[in-house]
Amino acid sequence: MQRPTVGIHRTPQIVPISAMRFTTATSLASAAALLVLNVRADLIAWTGPLCNLDEGADVVCNGECIAFSSRNSFQVTSANGNTVNLFTGLNCNAGTEILSGFILPGECIGVNPATPGGSFSCV
Image (cartoon, rainbow, N blue to C red; front, side):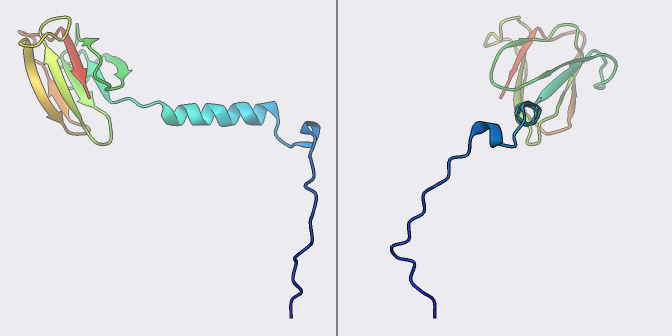
């Protein structure tokens, strides 16, 4: 038979900061790991027509209008795909779309060099 523990009160111990086992290096490494987990790239543009040659910056698809000059293809690198709009103008102006649609992950889209894109947005 167990004894009831009613009436037993323990005072919590206060541990001084100097006794904690977390070092600055451990804290910085943990913070860096969390930052890496939050960094993602959704789209990469290329100078070659088959997602080859010079690779552009990794872009996050958040609806922002981004320049698409000197690029002849792009590839969606996100896990779920993205909706991409490619424009002939520099400011993602409506009515100047040359491509608009959902692109599957890993798919490479070539852009006709005769009508190069000027900007794009993706979500």
